[in-house]
Length: 166
Image (tube, rainbow, N blue to C red; front, side, top):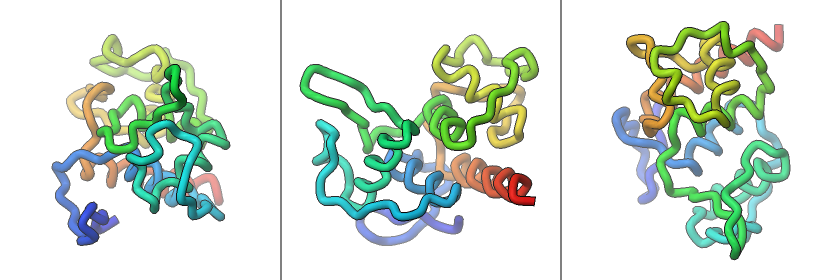
């Protein structure tokens, strides 16, 4: 990955910029070989107007496959596409795609107490597989991902996928 398309249509990398949920979802699904992602004008989500048209099919496909669940409220399901994605959220998405389940006691993570319960299996598994990398022994599960971190994760996913195909 050399660049990411900006909202204005230009391409830059800006490694320290944060990545949104819609950007991350499309990138990871493409890296993992998503095929036949539909082009849609509208989705089932209550915040559909906030999802850029190029990402609507990714959200619908990911929801249908159980990769994302969204947040249920009285007036519908919200996916918050423009929100910055955290390490924990990204780990859950990736792990739902690859289905890794590694015993949580296997990983040593310095900030383990900060990992939300709903993300423990995903973070532990992806750390053990080398898809998520620790920095000074920490994962920083509640911090937003940068584009540089996303590039590292995507490269690790490509390597992991290559190992599975051999």
